[in-house]
Image (cartoon, rainbow, N blue to C red; front, side):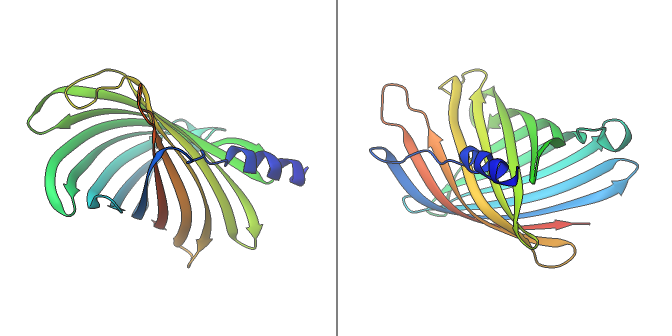
Length: 227
């Protein structure tokens, strides 16, 4: 059973091929802190710094979220509803270009499914996005699914998929439908009782109707703390 679950896990983790597509090498540094506030309340803060071979330092995404469990400890699926805000200044080689603000609503499923040693979680996120100096609100859906499986001791293999689906068009969100997707594979390991390190690879595939699709190949380093 474990072998079959492992095969299913690795199939889910397959990465989009990058041949014959415009590509960019990137490095993402992520720091996340989550706090249990009691009575079913949770708070989280996330900081993502992104570097690109073609654009240098290009983004500093900062997220704050407040959530509450749905039912007793989230029920059998571990459901938590969040509200949050994203402060997202963007750059080109370290030079500021534009400021984006986001309001987000999210329904998380911490215990979506268990298949042998593989644990699956997920979430549905809805975002409203604004950019300073550009009129209009961009609406976007971001379904996400993640699978984890122990490999050695407390080291976990982690695979994830996320789609970015544009629900409308405006001055800066012009595509409509699925704009891009992210597929990632990595290893998560504890540094101590409260802090974990996750190292991985992420492929971000951008859809370009009538043109050449894009691929960003990112090495990711994430520190996760829980309190």
